[in-house]
Image (tube, rainbow, N blue to C red; front, side, top):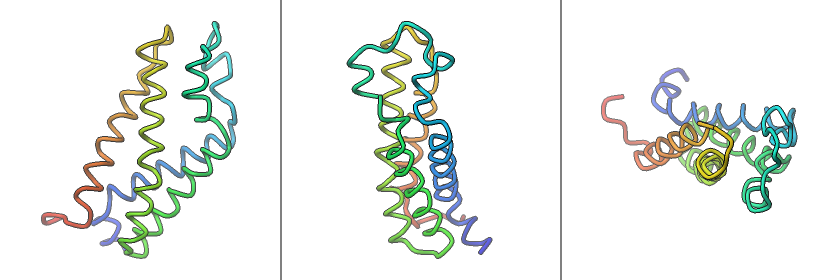
Amino acid sequence: MLKRIGKYYSHLCFGLASLMAGTYVFFHLNYLDSPEVTPPPPPGFAEHVLFGVADDWWFAGLLVVGGIVLLSGVLLDSITLRNAGMIIIAPLFGYLAFGFMIRGVFDIRFNLTWVFASLAVALLIGTAMRGGKHNGC
């Protein structure tokens, strides 16, 4: 089991991150509407339409499902489950990167979350492209 976890360490990390992010959103629904997170003025209509779902229950549910599928793929050594998990979470991480970029670059709200979300997307794509082919790892 530990050998498998080591072999698919990146997959494991993405699965855990998705599970943690989804669980966090479940316990903090609509956190982006909080004045502590989004100080006045309120987000513009376009920003709300583009990014308003990132703190909704169904988005959190998709993150949790993707994380569970990905973790199951690592623990059961199933390439099908690992690929399915990556397919589920890749657009979600991309959506977060894009949404926070709108907030951090084109809005008055200073936010570096988009940089880290973009890094996660880039690493996720690299992990998916590498698949199960590990050079000596």
